[in-house]
Length: 526
Image (cartoon, rainbow, N blue to C red; front, side):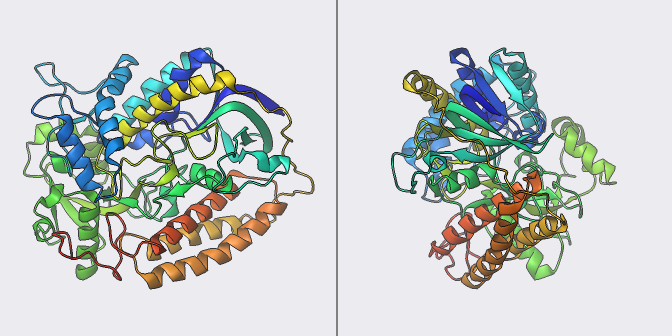
């Protein structure tokens, strides 16, 4: 089956939904979601969205905080652009029905997180992402020009390659004509042709054993763009959130928002001793890369499975009011956060690199945009400042929408694209081939390409991954496609990119820390 549309949106988080809402009045939109619209990385964002709102905060402070966290790799021009445009886009979210917490004076109740010099994080209790997601989903479902396809999985982007033409990574004339999409209800791959396509598929947390991301975060967008010969960058910078709830066996790991530390909670060893001052003068509110590495170090020297986050000294009623979901979740495990410390452990959380885009969200493939976590804009550099990601997503969705609306005026749908060839394909005889390789990939990445790395670990990871890659490609070539097989293939692609880019980094910077090139003369060295 072949379907045509003006705008094809792959992904249903904050970036994909806000883009769809903005372009829908200019043409037909088809929005692809691999599961339900509501189930995205955005939904699990607890802390909030960062933007300058009131004095004494200002753009310069927010820019400087972002640059410091990014450890010298941010694009200052892009940082200034996002910081300056974020307040307007947040107002748009509010107009769409998103409700942020206010204080008794009717002003927004701003939070503060690690790396921020001022209170600037707008939030809704401790489930900001869910509030944003639900509000945008309501608006999208109401819009007559947006066709929503849930339980559809984008397999590959369509380019000249599918017309038998040579496509190379550094060519500037590669065109995106849409995508091949797997209908999960019947295992049929359908052809979706579009004038422009937006990739907004989120991150890749499930490349690791422990992650705060939902099961759908499998690096699909990065892998698709890489296979289509688009440029991917900065993949070595994988952010581990310092504090996920230590509860072995639970996936995804429950996030304990950084806002709790901003509220006054203190990190301690399992023996109850504060330790962050040893590593950074900002203590428990140091940037995430430093805190995650400090926790990892404390766990290794003590042999503990976790550390503790103590909020028991804080006002109990305010604590429960500001963090009701964390309170309820911990209480379900017999942990009363008003009295007991919370056991926490770092978990894979955010991908700072991704599909390289310009200031309008244009990738290196014509007619293809990327926004949100899947993209690499220059904002985050080597380490994302807390709560900057949602701001980046709405700013880039807006910019991509404005650019795409102009693009479709002179763009025709390419009707000569062949349908997906399933001749000779059969269902895999044993699913264990897929599930076992999936687990092995996660173990390889967790053990060798985690918070602390080395040349030896990276080389070993690459050799192990190459074996699984060969096995998986052989299976892919002869199989009727399934979500699990496609996700495994994508994870392997992304794992390869992370390892190769980490090997090319002959220094420790931001989220990439290697014992072969330890960072010298820095307060975070340990």
